[in-house]
Amino acid sequence: MKITGVDVYRYDVGYAHGVYVMSGDRAAATEDGTLVRIRTDEGLDGWGEITTLGATYLPTFPAGIRAALGELARAVLGSDPTNLNQIHATMDATLMGQTFAKSAIDIACWDLLGKSVGLPISALLGGVLNDDFALYEAVPLGTPATMAEFVTARRSAGINRFQLKVGNHPRDDVARAKACVEAGDGNTVVVADANGGWNVADAQIALRGMEELPIFVEQPCRTTTDSILAHAHSTLPLVLDESIVDSAGVFRAKYEARAASINIKFGKLGGLSNAARMRDLTQELNLLVSVEDMWGGDVITAATSHLAASTRTEALLMTPFFNDWTDGHVAGHLPRSVDGRGSAPTGPGLGITVDVGRLGEPLTVVEF
Image (cartoon, rainbow, N blue to C red; front, side):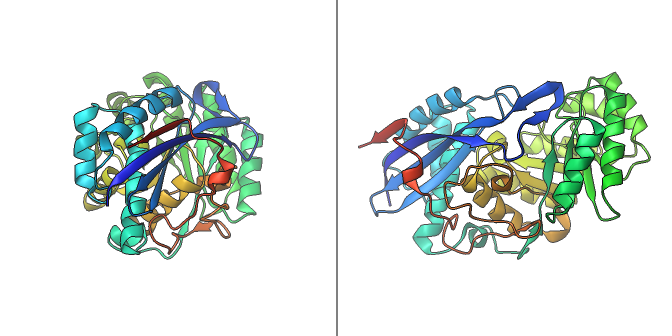
C-alpha cells in the first residue's frame, strides 16, 4: 500500500455546555479543529485529528500545525502507511518536534493499518481489556455553586468522574473543590486540575486547604520541578500531565514527584504509537494512567476509545469522550457513550466513517 494523497481540513468544534473556562481565565466556546485524510493506491482512506485547546494551553496553534502538516504530507507521499515505524522515521527526518502535526498523520495511518487487515485498532494494540469503561467530564472553572451544579447535572447523565478546573486564587479553588466533592457521592472520582496555573506558593496554599478532601490534584504548576516543590508536603495523590512529554518524564514523575498517575495526550507525544508506548510504560511502573488529547470530535474520540479499551482495567483512571463535550460530529456522533460509559468501535481501524460532505473543501491537498 502506498500513500497517494493527503488532505487537510478545518472544522469548528464547539463546546456543548456553553463556554469552557480553565485557569488564567482561558476560555473558549469554539475551537479550530484539523482533520487529516490519507488516501492510498488501494482505495482505502485513513483519518486523523488534532484539535488544540486554544493557543496558550500547550505550545501549539492551528496555523502552525497546518504549516507542519504540509511539509510532513509531502514527505510521506509514496510511503507505506501501515509501516508505522518508517512513517515516524520519515516524519522525524523532515521536522524536529512538531508532535501535534505528526499525531494526526500517525492516527490516520493506524486507521489504515486496521482497515488493511480488517481489525479494530484496539485489537492491534493487543486486544480489548475493557468492553466498556467509565468516562469523565471536565467542570469549567466558575463559582463553587455553578461548578457543583455542573457536577449534579452530569451525574444525572451517568457521569461520576470529574476533572475540576482550578488554578486561580487558591482559597477560591479550595471552595470549588469542596463544593464539587459535596455534589458527588462515595464513588465519585474528583481530580482538581490547575493546568499549571498556580505558582509554587499558591499551589501549596491550595493543596493544604484541600488536604482532607478525597481528590487527586493535577499539574499544580507548569513544570514538573515546581509541581514537586508544591506537592512536597501533601498527601493528595498527584497527577502530572502537561509537563510529561517523554519516557524520562514518566520515570521522574514516579521517583521524584511521587506521582500517582500520568495523563497521556496524543498530540504532545506525536500520536497513538507513542501514546501506547507511554501507556504501557506507565502501567508497568504501577501508576494510574489517563488517556486523551487536547480537544476534538468523533475522530479523536474513536482513537481515545481504542487506547482506553486496551488499557488494564485497574490502571485506567480517566478518559473522556470529547464528542460528548463538543459538537464535532463528523462521523455521526460515533462512538457514542451510554449512561456515562464508553466503548471502542468494533469495525476495522478507527471503526467510524467520516462524512466528507460535512467538511467542505480541504485547506491543503498534497498528492502525486
